[in-house]
Structure formats: structure tokens, C-alpha cells
Length: 106
Image 1 (cartoon, rainbow, N blue to C red):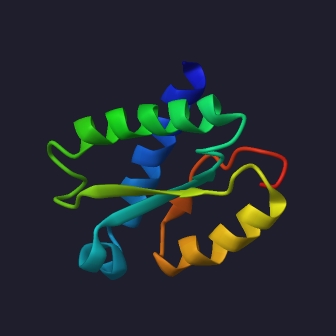
Image 2: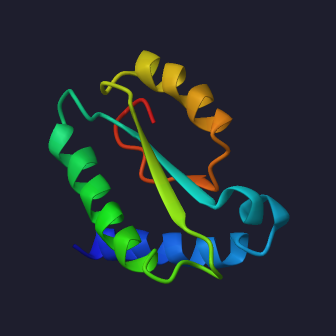
């Protein structure tokens, strides 16, 4: 629980700092998560993702300086090859950060 709380506070702090840039004003604030959503250890990535989404729901009620925060997920199937495949795709979405990469491949 402390880890999720820490992650959420980190996301909020980074969002406040990022929101001042013109890029953030143009596209909103984007975060991504690459993790094992379909293979073991599935519960870790899914539970962290649910915690982040719950926090973002609260934060998006007012937004950060009027900007909404979005989160995308990418499934690496808990493999180095999967992570290497998903990483460039995730970067194309220009996230402020990739949150909580989970697994040996990360």
C-alpha cells in the first residue's frame, strides 16, 4: 500500500512540474506502464495499474492546472523480448514517465 501511495504522489509531483511546459499543454499529461499484464506475475502489474488509475480518477476531477492525466498500458508478457518490443511503442506516445516497470526484463 505504501508503494502505491508513493507512486501516486510521485506521479502527482511530476505532473505538476511537467504541466508548465507547452508540450504538456498541447497533449495533456501522459504516463505509461509496461508490465506483465497477461503472464506471471500478472497480479503485480495489474494491481499497481489499478491503484494508479484509482488515484488518477481522483486527480482528474480537477486536473493539474486544467490538464487531464492519462495512463496507457503495454503488455511485455514478462519477457525481455516483450519489453524491448513495447518500449519504443511506448515512447512514441511521448509519456512524461514510464511508471513501475515490473519484471526482470525491465
